[in-house]
Image (tube, rainbow, N blue to C red):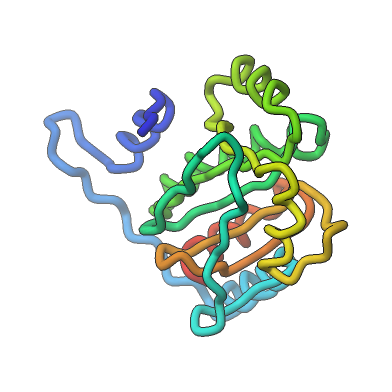
Length: 196
């Protein structure tokens, strides 16, 4: 398992340790108003291309992975991002996703972000990974596996990337979004990954 310094620092700050090592109490957040709850629900519905409530959510299906890689196990919320080194919108959203990873941790949302490249050439992904060691970008869809991956979610083969899958700790797909995320999408992402 790879830990980076930023994740450790975010965890340390998010856990609220005081100078003497004792756990500091966080101030309680006020309960959301009914209007805020409804606004968040509408934001989630507008964010997801497909959104399933808990009892109806399908199991998440990993694509066939290249190079003998194995899919991560279930057990925590997961944000799976299908992307490519040649995809401009994919590359532009990665810093935002990484920023949100820290913000989600600070908001008490335990999520693991997993990038799955759809690049056909292993070398392109390797070169990208060497230039961006702060990103865990080692997984790649096996040759010919993209269409079958999309089929698992009833998505047409021409579905655009980036594509986002929000998966709950039980391994069920709660949200699928085709298209990049923007600054205004944080509330929807947080709500989905909190189980909304």
